[in-house]
Image (cartoon, rainbow, N blue to C red; front, top):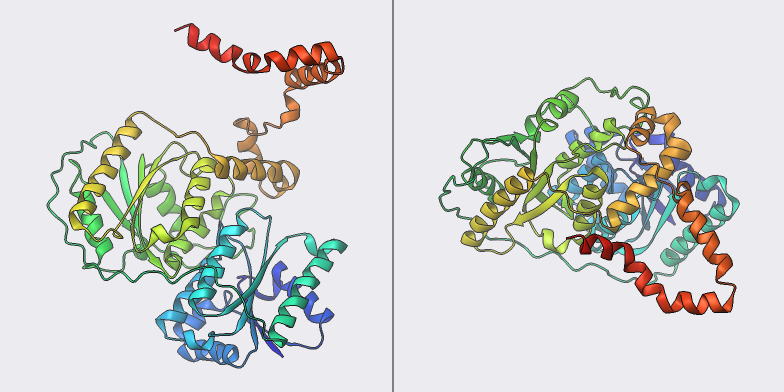
Length: 457
């Protein structure tokens, strides 16, 4: 049995994820495991078609494929994303067809589920037999029980291959979009004279629906807005996971990304991302931009901004995009206003939606409005808060400083007044008379302070 491991870590053999693979290999000497360092060698794989062909040849000759990677900002690293795009661009889908597959990730379990869903969907699109995923904390290999769990996962994966077990398909194929958007003429009715608006796009050329939507969106404003194409930005490569930036926020790359972000993106009041769906997410170019923001670590990059999306492609079929955007908005303290896509297939409707997006972005920015944080954002905030307090503050001192200054270390046990009340209640409710009276008046008690606020009006 031959298993090809597509290693998605940019660090290659120095990857924590690969240590889990090595552990599996030593515990299961039977299967032949072939590791291909995809992300580390992505530039060669992309430029040298022979190098890509050799990867595909190994996959063709395998009995199973293990996608192994660290989770980078909700998804796979940008280098890995680019490889997945190349599979379709170079017509290599048949090499994956009907092969059993599984996903192994390492992370701090922060939105790893969106990365798993993305990969599950990609495997379904490739008509692979998706067995399961395994999400490992970065320190799980040091724990006996977690090592046992990892071996159970690997053992079942090998068993499924050996016995040709059937598997379930979770995701249906995405609808093909042949619609050609024909924009109407904009009226320049939105007064944006007091707001700095930038559009960040991964558009690859004129004539596309995305390019036309951007043009139509621009025509809605009284003042010209700036469009920043990521293809024009000097970005030499994706995040390497090297932690070179951890102490002083200085990236190992010496390119134009940091200046681009600090001088063009940060000063904006309103940021609109105009993006294309490629496979089951936005493009690798956008992933590259996203991953390189790690130089800011776990501090909000768009705090107080209004953010919108213009998307070409079937975004409505990708639920995890909403999960990611909602979590990002809550954690980074920006207002996710909404998104316009070309899915409806109606040019007039798209024109109307683009104008509506522009109006909402400007009006809400004038009011400095931020939606309340919902569960995804609150959960992300608390997990990163705990990680920063416990360990990451030594690796990322700027995170620790920011969290302290903004009082984000809001641990429940710090509310000594509330703790005192709860202790008192737990004692008093041991008395039947008090407990009966308490249960009788609990609803009135819950609304008492709120009612005072309302009655003052």
